Image 1: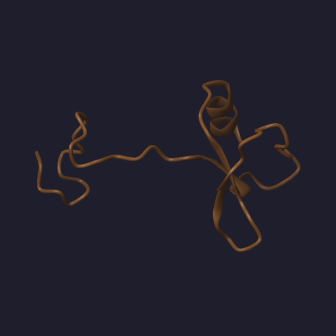
Image 2 (image 1 turned 30 degrees about the vertical axis):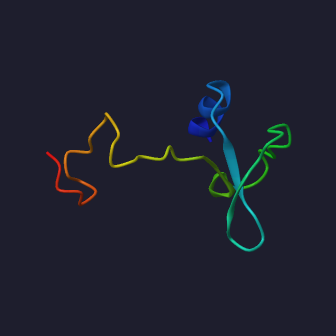
Image 3 (image 1 turned 90 degrees about the vertical axis):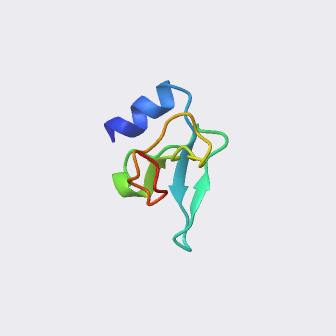
Length: 65
């Protein structure tokens, strides 16, 4: 749960897993139920583009080093 709380404090988008198993943005971010399993919530991963200034070092298979 700590990464979710830290993400919330940092203003990151918190997502929850709906009944279909899909990750959905919690736009209001006021209804986080700490009684649920921590796997029901996550901090939305940041998208990395090929032209990103932060290269992955080829870890994603892009071939960049």
